[in-house]
Length: 133
Image 1 (cartoon, rainbow, N blue to C red):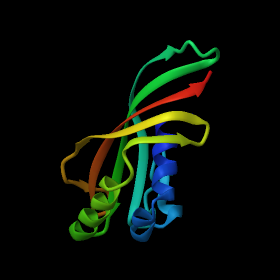
Image 2 (image 1 turned 45 degrees about the vertical axis):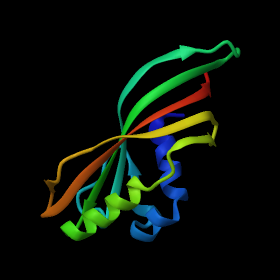
Image 3 (image 1 turned 180 degrees about the vertical axis):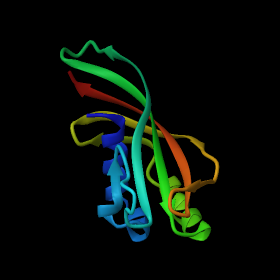
Image 4 (image 1 turned 60 degrees about the vertical axis):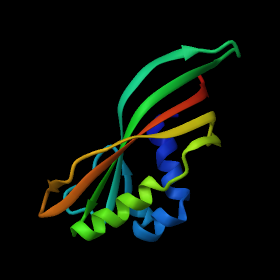
C-alpha cells in the first residue's frame, strides 16, 4: 500500500469529489493525452524512509502525495480543487490495508496550462500510515 493508494481510495469514497469527477477519471501514475475531463491524477512525490514499528511485521510510512486536477475551464479547475481540498483529513483511521492513517494538506500548487488547452493545478497531501511489510 502506498500514500497514493490511500489518497486514491479517499477520493473515490468522497461524494463531493465524485460529484465533480467521474470515478473512471481518477487515475494513478499518468493521465493519457485525451483523457476525459475533468480528471484527477494521484502520484507519490516523495517518501520518507519507512520506519519499523515494535509491532512485528509493521512499518510506519510518511509520503507526500500530489493530486493534479486537469479541467476544461478555469472555473471547473477551481471547483474540482475545492472538492479535493475538502476531502477528509486529520486522523482518518483505517484505509484498505493501512492502519493509523493520518492525512494532512501540504500545499496548493500554481495554476498552469495543461496539455491540449486544459487547465491544471495540484493539491499536495502528507499521508502517514502503518502497513504490513
